[in-house]
Image 1 (cartoon, rainbow, N blue to C red):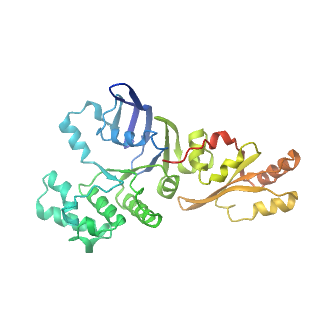
Image 2 (cartoon, one colour; image 1 turned 90 degrees about the horizontal axis):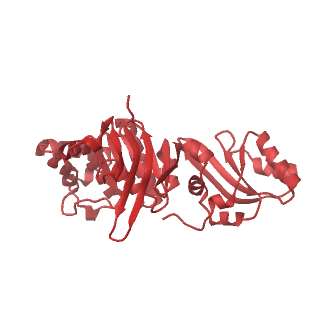
Image 3 (spheres, rainbow, N blue to C red; image 1 turned 60 degrees about the vertical axis):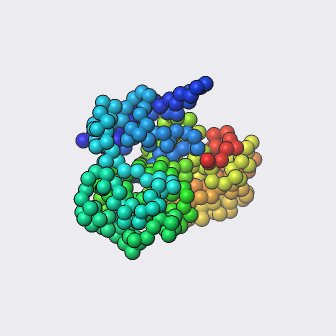
Length: 343
């Protein structure tokens, strides 16, 4: 069976009067049916351009995209419009019609494809029930909170029974608590209806919350991809390491010091390993970063430790940690810290 989405050597170049910008450079990626895949990168990396190429709202300069084995590059505009009804999209700023009620906003995509009014309104009410807004059917967007607006946008996106849901920075305008509730809703939709979800974000926490796979875009190229657990546990490229590590400005203190990163798993994240190591080796360490994440319902944590300058003591500490089956890797600060924040 074909993957749901196949991105094959996609390049996208934007040409201006005086110069051209290569936003994507030969990106190849597959997303399986029913997956929740995160596409993550720094601001300007090309991830939003990539998501617009998935439904050919942005036509690649080279390469192509296949949806369930169907090549979009060979389709007529009419055929593309048909495929796009299977690919819904939600956005950072909701894009609701302010002059329409919540119910009418959800009906809107069904009107476009010619669903009869009574059937559309029945379907819209069912969807508002699913997203927890049945009582807001007659309200207008201006009367809703940001989280409620995004729930309406999700209901609207589901109106025509899409196979794929694209989320372009869909939680960036929301507070952390509301973000968590929206991500839980997307997880529920994926679980209950089998919809393949692609999440474009610059926040590793969003990917870790609900995604099973992640693709890291850096300067228009696919830097790394794999399961979220693989990439979080063992980031290979500088781009991945920046996204995994860049959670605390103190990481900048790592320059010129001997530092290691320890990755905890379900079995080790609650044991006092560091305290026991300090007692055993009789030397202090400086904890530069400590972070615990829930990845797929399993506790995963990481620490970056600055070890003593004494090589013998430092080697003893690394040996102690490895004996306890922890993943320990020496950290090169230049791979992680470049002074840039997440845009």
